[in-house]
Amino acid sequence: MARTDGRDRQGSAVSARWRIVGWIVLTTALALLAVTVTMRSVMSGQVAEAANVAVVQEIEEFRTFAAEGLDPRTARPFTSMDALMERYLARQQPLAGEAIVGVAGGRVLAAQGVADTTGNVLVGDAALVERILRDAQTAGVYETAHGTVRWGKAAAVAAGEPATTPPERRAHLVVAQFTGAAQEEANRQAVLLFGVAVGGLGLTAGIAWLVARQIMRPIRTVRETAESITAHDLSARIPVDGRDDLAQLAETLNAMLDRVEASHLAQRHFIAEAREHLNEPQRRVAAALRELIDEDLPGAERARIACGAQALIGRMGRTLADLDVLAQSGNPGFVKPARVSVGEVTADVAAEASRPGTHPERHFRIEATGHADAWLDRARIADAVRQLIENAVGHTGPGDTIRIGSSVDEGSASFWVANPGAPLDPERARALLESYRSAAGTDPGMGLGLAVVKAVAEAHQGTAWVESGDGADTRFGISVPLEALAPARRPDDAFADRLASTLGEES
Image (cartoon, rainbow, N blue to C red):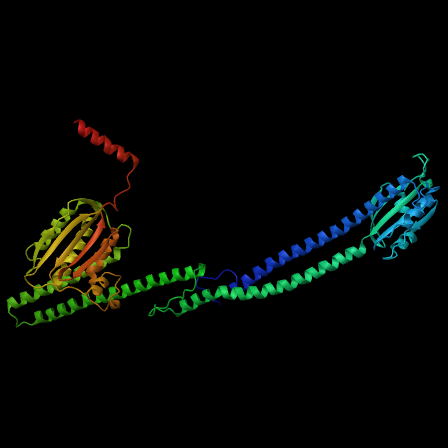
């Protein structure tokens, strides 16, 4: 019994290369077939048209000759229709496939051509001549044992005789075009054209095979690159050659692989940081509990150890809270914006950091305050600034002063925390906030705190940044637009604002 995984494959089992070749060959074959059939039809039409023209021309010449009624040799009128017909036929040289026959006085005469004996064929077929003479039409097409015959006839009477002369006393000229040989030649040319088309189709199939191979080569490279990517190695990239659609596809896939690798590295760093932030406090809490079990410790020492253990447990709680924030950062409702004062947020965070017992042996002061309102999630911005404060505390010593500030400039609000610690190398400072690229998680400087800061900034359509070096203090901050998260205004909101302004002025 076959096993299925719910993902049955559908579609053609034929490779894309064969499908490309098949469609090209099919399209070319239909085009060549249409050309061959059209050309055969055109050539057959030309054969019929040439026969019709020849018949009409010969009939017109006979009518002109009969209307003149003069013997070219004596310049005198013909004495009989037999003489007229004999003189006229003696002057004609039928072409291949053409028969010119005259009937006068009960005799059937034929103009003798040098190309073939078609005239004799028509003379010898008395039934065909009789059929033509009895036909009420002056021209027509017959299918005979000799092939297709296109014919025309004309009658003439002797000078002085009335137009009502019975048919048996008239002279008739019959012109027939046997088109079988010409049609066979047209058919041979059509067959030759078909043979050339088949050869061209084979050549097209060969070229299509090579072209399809060339077209599919980048796709095969994409497949091979995808197969070389593993969960532990995401560094493979697709070679980009040229500027066509396939090159653009390769660039797009490479950009996607860059994002996947960056996300993978960020995940690895995230796990490493979380493990570091939880393992160390866990070890210290376990050690503290072991010391508390020791009954020989004095009460004051027990209290000190219990206080330290409680602090470590609180640290693990904050780490878990940071993990929760990062887990929610991709959700649509991560931020709940409202119109708040930039200065009030700065003052509240600074007052909380300066509260006694919060950060012992550190001093805090407000360096600058921005004066404007912005659409922000007050709680998330405050969390981000608290993380910057914790980061600054971890990089300063007892008695150091940490500065907290905010500013408003060119439609954005900035919040920052500066500390007098040693300046950072520019490359390391930039790597701290660039998608966890600092040694794939081996640099503990990023920490979960700065990851939370970056997540909050991006949720507000802003950026996280760091400034350091040139003898200046290290400054971490975020910049967010003032109105990016403002709700969309309806047309009646502007009217309500103008109305409220007008009423205010009147009052």
